[in-house]
Image 1: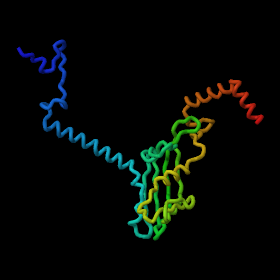
Image 2 (image 1 turned 60 degrees about the vertical axis):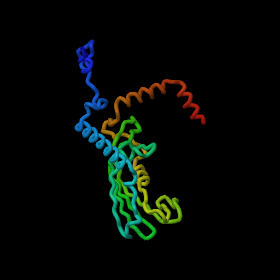
Image 3 (image 1 turned 60 degrees about the horizontal axis):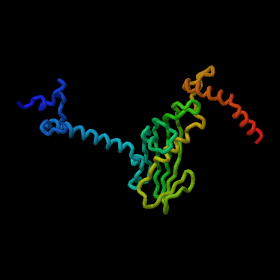
Image 4 (image 1 turned 90 degrees about the vertical axis):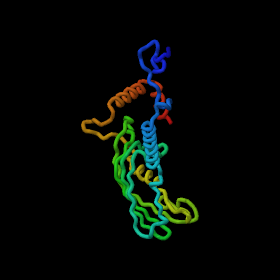
Length: 226
């Protein structure tokens, strides 16, 4: 007699039914399943497409060659994806709006940047993330010449053959310049601050350990002599 349990995927030593894989059994793959799999594939394809578009620096390129002389305004929203693409960045996250007003002439562009928003950086005291407001203005002049070079800090020269200009490195630089030199959580009064108390406790213990170590005292004396 033919073993029905074997065909159904039932173990002869157990009453547990082992479901057959739909993906590996062509008998069980119907048109509805195929349509569903195609739909899922399309979802992931479009998700990858839009992620690439967000990561693409082309959105910060100004195609100036097709613009008439005069004033042109460009608005940008800067977020985490932008900062993540910068190597060794100190900025962890942020939401910053950039408004660029460009006065275009025949062989020169005068760009004025207005920057406003908030970024996240690490606290210099406890190393936890903290919000830092950024607000300021910058100016950049772009000239047409023979090749790429920096004429001065605020003047860039690009070849006559160029048709677009990448603002992304300047946007990051301008935001970074607005950060304070010392970045610590603000005080809340009576000597309290918003730093992570556990981290502050560990730092205090580490400082006490260093103070008790005679090698640190000897090093301090050596520095004084030098």
